[in-house]
View (cartoon, rainbow, N blue to C red):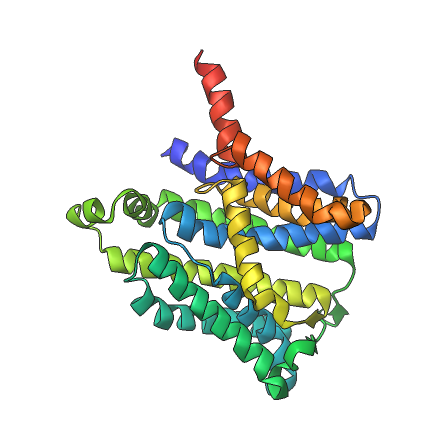
Length: 315
C-alpha cells in the first residue's frame, strides 16, 4: 500500500519541484511566459497520453477539444455573463458531453480508421469556429475577458507561471491516481490486447469511452488556461496542425509516461523559441533534432533514459 501511494505521489512531487526550481532561474517575464506555455501544453499532452500511451487509442483531433475550452472562456463571459472560472468549468462539462457523444460511435473503430474519424471531428470543430464569425470572431479571433478573483485582476507572466504550474501538478496527480487504479490497469490491458482484456472481463467499450472523455477534459482546461493567459484566442489552436503537435509531444516525450508528457511539451515549445536566431533554417534544424531524438531514444525521451539507467543499475 505504501509503495503504491509513493508511486502515485512521486511524479506530481517531481513536477512540483521542477516548477519551483525553475522559478529561481527566470531572468525575465519572457521566460516565465514560455515556461507557462510549456506547463499548459503538458497538461493537454498528459490527457492525450492517457488515451494513446495507456489505452492505445489514436486521436488526431484533440485540438478540437482544446479549442472548445479556449472559446468557452472567450464566448460565455460576454454572451452569458458567466465569470471566467465558471466558463472554464462550463467548457470542461461541454467538452466531456461532446466527447461522450462523439466517442461512443467512433471508438468502435480501430487503427487508421479511428485516426481518420478523430481527424474528421477535429476538422469539423475548427471549421465551425472559423465560420461562425458572429459568435467566435471567425479567423481573426476574439478577445478574452481577463480573470478577476475577489477584485484582483490576474495578470503578469510570473502569476500565470504559478497558476499553470499548479494546474499541471494537479493534472499529473489525477493522472497518476487514474493509472494506479483498477481503471488504469484496465487501460493497460486494453493497450496490450483488446481481445485479452475482454476475455478478462473488462468492459472494453466503457474503458475506451472513459479515457477518451477524461483526455478531452484535460485538453479543454488547457485550452481555457491558454486563452486566459493570452487574453485573445484564434482558431489556430483548434486546427489539425495543433492536433499533430500534441501527438508529436506525446511520442517525443514517451508514450505511457506522465513525465514524458512534460518533456515532450518542453521540446516542442522551447526549441522553436531557441532556434529563432537561425531564421530560414529554424524548421529544418527543429525537424533534424526531432529525427535524432526518435532514432536515438526510440521509446521517447523519458522511458529511454529511465531504461538506460535501469540497465546500468542491473549490471
